[in-house]
Image (tube, rainbow, N blue to C red; front, side, top):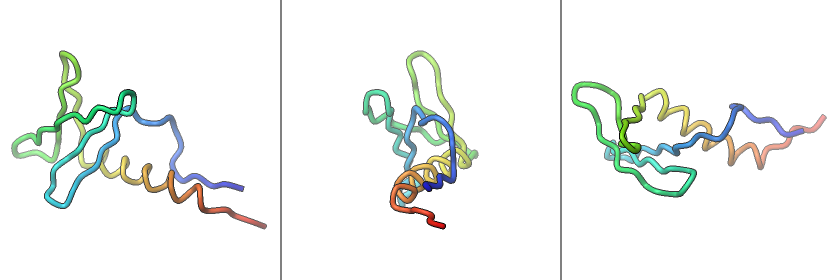
Length: 81
């Protein structure tokens, strides 16, 4: 049996924060890396998508990291009875 911690569709954007606190956003549809801008006095980031902005909170960044880690660890974890 394979156990997956977080369920749902694959996200459109892959979010990764480095040690310097910069956010890297990758569009999973086309592989494009989109520059993210940190908003002043807030723990939010934004990217320009077409003519609109998409915002990411610290919670979304953490969830993205958990999903990414669970995808890799779930493949190698098997539960046997």
